[in-house]
Amino acid sequence: MRKNIVAGNWKMNMDLETGIQLFNEIQQLLKEEVNGDQEVIICSPYIHLSSLSQLVNPNTNLSIGAQNCHQADSGAFTGEVSASIIASTGAAYVIIGHSERRLYFSESNSLLAQKLDTVLKNGMAPIFCVGETLEQRNNETYFEVIKEQLTEASFHLQGVEYRKMVLAYEPVWAIGTGLTASPEQAQEIHSFIRGLLADKYNQDLANNMTILYGGSCNPKNASELFAKSDIDGGLIGGASLKARDFVDIIKALNE
Ligand code: PEP
Image 1 (cartoon, rainbow, N blue to C red):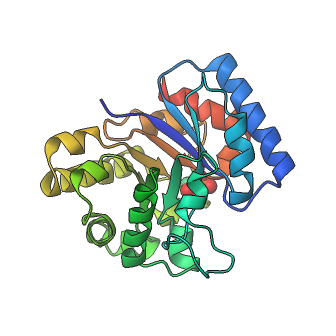
Image 2 (cartoon, rainbow, N blue to C red):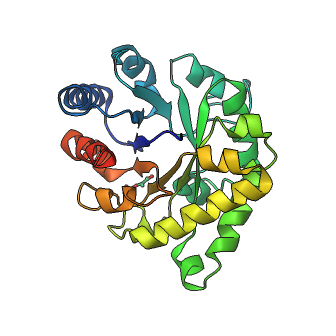
Image 3 (tube, helix red, strand yellow):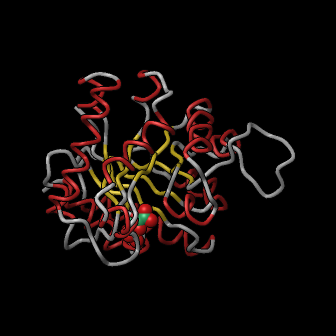
């Protein structure tokens, strides 16, 4: 049985104090209203990781994650943060390959391959993002694009390592735009990804891989998306900054 997960990506939002407030509100609402077996992950800015890790109630299924890391173990890389430093805060996940990193920081598939390695080596799980641009959707190259992203960045991993990852399909044209992939469009890609995993590894690994959908997911559209058989939860940007909306999306997983 694969895990159902809702992960929030706070991006570059929330100072430390407001982040802690938001985290406490989310945790309180989860305690009062949610009792499914889903996992919830909060991916905050680096600054918050240590404080949030210490606030996690061990009776909840809540984990903390980062949004990026440097590919090297340590060294003279001023301003960067390694996976081992992230792991030392208590974080369990790291988002790798978000489209904003690919676009604004020119992160290539080969660089992302190194980042996946360092996250896994440090005992954490990558949330590895793939997705096509609007141009690629319109010129119908999106299947090739997603296959290339997965192959070049992640198919060097052994199956035993791959099983520790979470994948996220995030069409770039749907991120922060208010445009959502229809449940059918998302299901088509999730099922395609599962097929690629079955071909490369095996059917058991494919069946057990958690594949999240991300892109303007909100409390209104979450139920329809999560109802699709290959969609195992969401990676949530904007709506993860409001405790009420985020928890309502989590509740949609259990409907
Ligand atoms: C994201 O940044 O991963 C994301 C899905 O953002 P949004 O929900 O705001 O579209």
